[in-house]
Length: 147
Length: 96
Image 1 (cartoon, chains in turn brown, blue):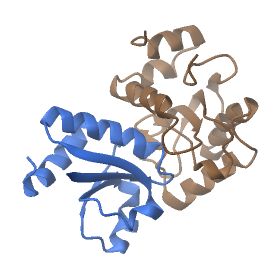
Image 2 (spheres, chains in turn cyan, red; image 1 turned 90 degrees about the vertical axis):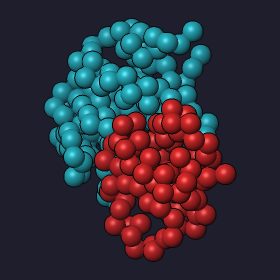
Image 3 (cartoon, one colour; image 1 turned 180 degrees about the vertical axis):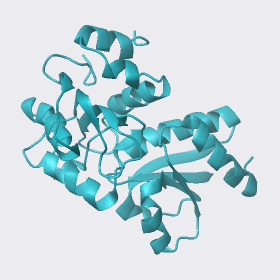
């Protein structure tokens, strides 16, 4: 079992959001639902983006909402949400279609999640993921190289 | 060994992802360096030779008045942008 594996409990497709803050709240709510983070985690992510800018937008089309462990992370966890209406995260250069939110308990233990994110970006899978509606297809696409 | 520090707001997500792309670029061009990631508040005291971060952090870094080379990226996980900006710095340092 792998913490970067997607299930019905941590994935939502085609979600409608009001703005970037709403998008972060909804993505992080999936972490909260699984007991990975406390209620304050989403607000902390939003505060960090306000303070530092849209550093969670690591490549066009994808944001990875996260903050420091001490801001409410309880365990290593991940969620994936695709947006019905892409949103700009604050002044991000491009709109976000896919959000992979995660929580980390230190600087290293969530390595598998980061590897998966890097693979998605480097393999150019963001557009494909943004139009998906099946968790099986999603896991097949991103887990393709995994034994 | 050459030290490279990748920096983002939290120091464990965007910077960690960027570190992986930096490491694959280094491998591709055959340069050995120790790469690590951290958050911006601890970056100011760093002894790294090169700091790599996102464009959105540029103004904050300029305020720190740091002596090492600074590289700012539009896309943190874009190997071609990393290569384009890192290679001249490595050449200037004689590491390439």
